[in-house]
Image (cartoon, rainbow, N blue to C red):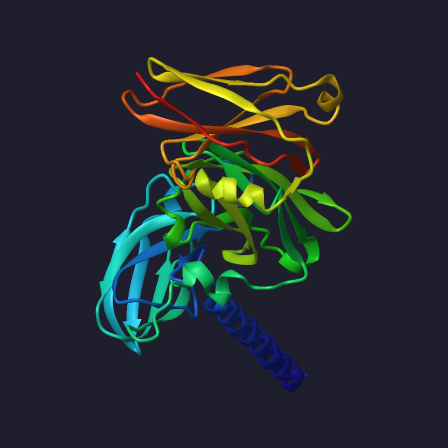
Length: 377
């Protein structure tokens, strides 16, 4: 009897020990509540100043729009080259909220080429680390933010759909891009940290500037989590810009979609590709200058042609070949003149017109008339 009790005690102690060890292993393997989103795991970056971006797991409850709780700061960052720790920093980020994908919390300068590991931890999950490994190289450096495969990961459960693939605008205009996102609810597991994310590549940063993002919320529908929103960008100058759009799941960007934003001259060229020259030609009569403006006149469109022609498109530019600083204006085809304001004093402007009708996405036009010119007063 005593032997049985002794064996039972050994069994209980053994099971308890296994339980403790198992818990310890689970605890040790768990990740920190902070996640590093930049530099991207597996990416190659150029030597020099490297931005460090993080996002944070939401605590239980409704934390929508709230800033980080006290136990999420400071963020401890450790940088390793191989197995050697090079530096450790403690950062207290400000202005980063749970409802966003996070933001830049620090930067570090790395001039030596090689493979590095960056680790992050917060007091809430002390001793647990989230880490990324990346290379620093001159010869093979690439901007992973622009084209890296880690920023266009394909996953059948994660999708983003921009309203259109191409937008045309003028300098100074705000482009509003609606989008919808769909994520397979089962594929996210228990960590449903889902956000909209986008990126402007280096070649477009001087053309467009982020203006705002509408609020959106995720709802479950037919086994998917779905959300709809609108992002806004201000167009700065003429050119063709790109915007990369993603759905962000647990700190990783998926399903890259490219949206083109053609501004000014580039928008005119883009529109021309979808035009059909089928309308009757209109006739320009004169261009008369006045103070910082000019008045353009044309021959009245006949009643028969008004059934086909809805607008008169006026194009004007200080360049006689209409190859730079080109602006357009649409007026009713029932009119016979238009005053164009806001022109540069003492400058010479050229103007031409054509018939214009738009039905859905199809644009029907006539050939351009010959040009008229006016010296602005």
